[in-house]
Image (cartoon, rainbow, N blue to C red; front, side):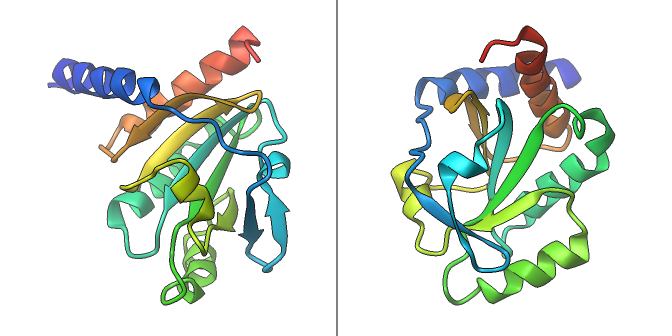
Length: 163
């Protein structure tokens, strides 16, 4: 079963890699204090996992919870950034959700969906690995265990120094 799951995830990764788009450094998001931040500042490190999520999306929260559970495998080598796609009706829940979950990531909001629209994100959870400002991997959906593969893939770029 694990082998089948790995093959499915690898196939999905190959398909999604073909359509991966780079994040424009001039697009802005807001931090949880409400301050506007350029994506160039958010992506300042060499290897960053970016996860798009929403408060109403259970698979999104499950993925972010799972990444938090394995924080010791990535914390000192790469960053995980969570970007909420909640709209005006649900944006107020973001801060309380993050506080309750105690996620160890930077969290930003894309209230007007400017970033999500620029990347043509139609479905969440959606994750990307950004290396040196370029998208090297993207994936839609979450399956338990895929967070480990995501982190391993991102750490491979850290080890390779391919940025």
